[in-house]
Image (cartoon, rainbow, N blue to C red; front, side, top):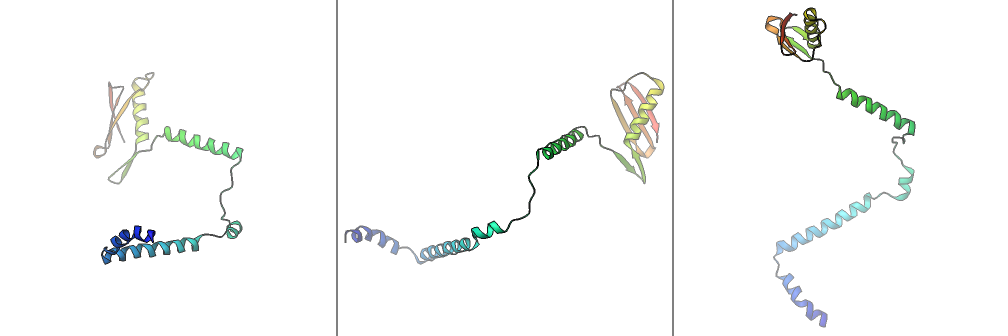
Length: 145
């Protein structure tokens, strides 16, 4: 009797809630039960997991790991020292920039044979079919292509 007396106020408070509130509580409760049933239905049995195995990658040996690390290091070095091949296409013609750079160096070395090329700026004007260059900030020249 004492328990009923202590809980009567709480029970009467719940009775004053609107009907929409009780409907929402019931929906949430039913959703929780449904989800719990789905999870127990999806749970794999211990016997089935030991029988069915998906094929996967085999563990690497020490030699395989070393070979893979060597390949990754080579790829990383190539990526760091990347020299892109640049080709300019203009009105149906192609200009290979590496060939123009070599031609500019060769033209420069005709005049100054023993001078090292430390900087090169190449200006390509496709409409004139001409490439202009500045080597080491002081020597200027042009090459047709």
